[in-house]
Length: 100
Image (cartoon, rainbow, N blue to C red; front, side):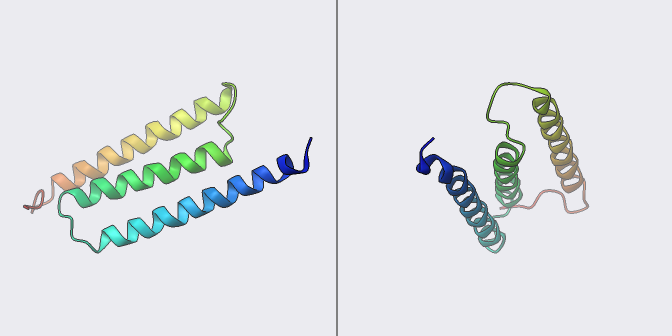
């Protein structure tokens, strides 16, 4: 094992942290743009990307299939339910979908 391979996990976590901070900044920036209908879609996409980064890194899903994949898949299933319920709530409000 070389000394470089000892530092690769630290570099990976730093890159992941920078990606999460960058995605958080983009999320905040898009919140103030007034994107109308596309705003929540972009926000949910950013949140799903952040969740995927966290799942791969901290649940260590990058490897052979195991029971972890079942729990990660159920997490994404529940995330899909939450997105669906959020969109349903947003669509059935008195004002409905915003007009462009």
